[in-house]
Structures are given as structure tokens and as C-alpha cells.
Length: 637
Image 1: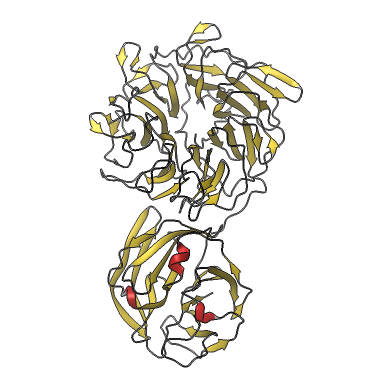
Image 2: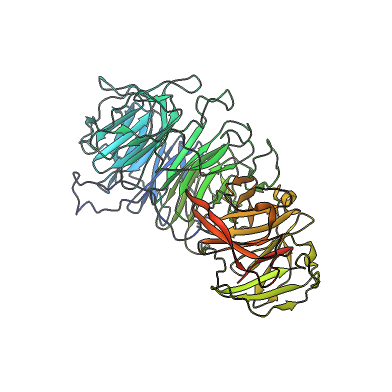
């Protein structure tokens, strides 16, 4: 469901009245490894729907009835606890419940958990939908006595001494609290902190909030579910709530991107969400069947928490092509997603691999900047899906309804350690002073048609002597060029994207980038200039005979090109006359086709989630000493 901070306070140093900080997402330094550890117990049946970590103990909740460790099987009523480093199942934590467990989170005392679900009795006594249990022995914590809820609790989050609950209830005790409520985390008393009327439905059924997530500072609560309004304001299936004061209010943030347009069988098609470790954005997953790129059915999307309008749009969307994604968790370095999807980056096909589709079976790690999948080769038996994920300081716990993970038997719970996980570096691009590389003959000249020309260019735009290098590649077929780190990428006239190392005028062996049939290959044939912008991880380009500036997401780690093409505001850029371009500092440099001059114009890309002004001002000539045009022109590393 989300990345949750571990509460590992010692009971000897904290009383039950001690306050817990807002439980937020855990920032991880690298990708987790893809090979699950061997010591986890096997959950034998049902689903794992919730995962919590209290000290060195993992608590799972769900619909299962037994768990096996080694040769020993333990009967369990949808709750089990085991040692996080060995998988040894607790023999003292075996509470009995008469209904489904939907959510489990650590309490602030470091010794217990809050449990929410559809149950009415716990350990033979009446505890309807919400209870606090000791991790040591499964007993009910006597001091926590919430009023009776008349419907299921779907999710819980903790903020200091406030416990927020979401579900399908309408009353708490005798008080009207539809779908959202807040409690004193120590006593269970109903409070007025979260007292907002949630009403209406998306597509039949009953009003309910299915998932909630809190920003790390505790100031914003995101809610998704089957509802149409919150506190009388239109909020179709998703709302951002201001929890920064003693009385929560509906934040101005709103979007109309989740209307009733997906498959008719779903009351709500939103499935999970998670807030990033820095609180800047949140991720939403959906079901709903394939309905094209004008909808968000069967997708994963990123949204910024800073929005304050009624027309918020996703920063990026990754489409599965008709398969559901359930659990998502953001760790800063990656967005992990689990479901029964078969592909990602698949916006143009239903239930098959379309243009640009990346095969990914049931689990994936996405680039937070672009939403495109990293090269991360974990896979799982897809089943229905992954229903919860817990990111900790040591790795990632994954709960599902299937027994196989990366080819090994891991019954419904798997743990991927950060140890030996892949380190990710931030891509870099060359800057001036540097060397301009021109691939092929500049137009209107008699230079060799297939050589690479290297010309030093200072930050003051003085150019040096040009050196030409012969290569087996026929550079006349290049259609633009861009550099990331020490790799030179060249779109080709036949629709390929080529890559090779480039170091001190040494051109390495060329390789084809797998575009997976993506539509960028069609564009590549007529590209006239292209560059990569690292702050947003976008590739911008111009095409012959067109006056637009286009862009796509690009993730260098996996060399995945976004399937969807977008149009940028070109401002004063004469896009139809560009014959090679690159970015350095605050400027976009380009060769002008009519004069051959090197020109520049202001360029502010912003960052992912906070776009800049783009093209600024009007172009000016910075060097006219030679013809800077070429089939491929960029700045060398």
C-alpha cells in the first residue's frame, strides 16, 4: 500500500501516551535487489493485504487462515507475526477474528498495532472494525476503546496522537462520520480533527474511502475511493485534505481526471496511493480496462501535492494496456508497483503489447521522474495482484495472493533487501566550454559526408580548430544527436536509435536501442535536432517540415523512450530551421539552417513536477565562424 516508517521505540522508554511522528514514506538510497530472501514464512492461502513492522517484528494482515515456516504450519485468522530477520513465526501472537483484515499499522508505543477491517469480534469479545493489539501476545490493548463503527475500516494512518480511519462506515458510535474519521490514538475516543462529509458515488455502490496517505509533515491527507463530494465540494474519487490545523478542511487541489469512464463493473477504479518521502508528490494506481490515453483507466500516475487549482493534471502516466495495478510505494529513488500487469509504457493497445510496450510481469520499479520502468528484472506469478508493500530502511516487503516470486516459492510474502541492490546515478549532459561534434556533412558545404567533426567552443563562444574523424558508420544517415554521460545517441534515417560511447573524439562501437516498436522510431526518420534535459528527464526534438518542438520522457538507466509524444511551447524557437541543438546552462543552442550560424535562446526546463518557463526571449547568434549544421550535431562529453 505504501512505504511506512518503522516505529522501533522501546516499551521501557516510552509510555502508551507517547506521541508518534507522522508515519511517512521511507527514502531508500538505491533499488532493492530482485532476488527475495530465503527465510520468510509461506502464507498458505488467501491474500496478504497489509504489512506492518514494529521493532524487529513483521505483522501481516489479510484473508489467510494458515502460515507455514519450515515443516510447521500455524493456524492464523488473518493475522500473523514473525521475526523480521529470520522469519520465525511468533507462537504467542495468534489473535482470533471473525472477519477480514484490511489494514495493519504500527502504533506509537512501539509494542502494538492498530488493525482495521470487517471483523466484529476479536479474541471472542466485541471489537467492531477497529482494534489495537499487543504484538507480544495478540491481546487487545485495554486502553484503546473506539466507539462502534457501522461499516468496514479500509485504511488507517497515524499522525502524532491522531489516528485517521477510512472505510465504508457512516456512523461512529451515534455520530455521523461518513467514510472518514479521526480518533485519539491512545484512548480511541472519536475526535473532530477529521469531520468532513464524504458523499455520493462514482458508479453505484456505497460511499466509501478505500485508501488514505499522509504527507510526512502531517499537513496533507490524500484520499481515494467511491465518492463524489467532500464537505460539499466536488471531488470525484480523489481528494486532498488539509490536516495542518486542529480541524481538517478540503484543500483547493482538485482534478476532473477520474470521471466514470472505465469499465461498468467498478464502483471506483482507483486502487492505491502513496506519498513520496519528501511529500512533494503522490502516486495513484487504477483498474478499469483499456479505454485509451484520454482516460486514466489501468494506469499508474504521479500527482504533485503543491497544486492549488481545480484542474490538476498528472505529471506523468504509465499505461499497462488493460491490466490492473494495485499496490504502489514511493521510495524517492523508485516507485514500486504491483498488480497483474504484463506490460508498462503501453498506452496504445488493449490486452496486448502495443507500440513501445515494456514486458513486466506483476511487479516493477519505475523512474519517479518519468514513470517509465527501470531495468529491474524481478517478476512474480501475477494472480490478482500485490495488495500491500512496505518499504523500510533495509528493503521492501511485498504482500500478494500468489506463491512464486522471481522463480522461487515465496508464499504471498516476499522481502527484497537493499543489500546488493542497484545504485542509480543522476544522468549528466555536457556543458560549455566544450567540444561541438557534427556527424555528417554540414549542409551547403563540401566536407566529407560521413565523418565526425569535433570543434572546440569556449564559454565565450570562441571556436577552435576542427578535427575530422573517419568512422565505419555512414553519418549522412544520422538524424540528430544527443549525449548523456559518455554515451552518444543518434536517431537514424531508418527509424533506429543508435548509441555508442564517445570519449575524447573516440567513437565506440554502435548498438541499437530497443524502441520496442515505439512511435519514436517514426519520428526519428525526420528529426533535425534533439537534446536530453536531465532535470526533467525529457528528450526534446524538432522534425523536418514542422514548426513544433516535441518531447518525450526518457529514462537513461533502461534506455526506455516514452511511448507518448507531447508538444512543448516553442516560444521564439524557429523549430523548422533547427539543424542540431544542445542545452548548456540556462540556454538552448541550435544551428540555424539558413545561415549555418550557432544561435542560442533562453531555456528554463524546471524540474519534474514543476515545469519551468521553457523557451525564454528571442534567439541571438553566438558564433558565425563556420557552418554549424549537420545531420547530427551536439555537445561532446
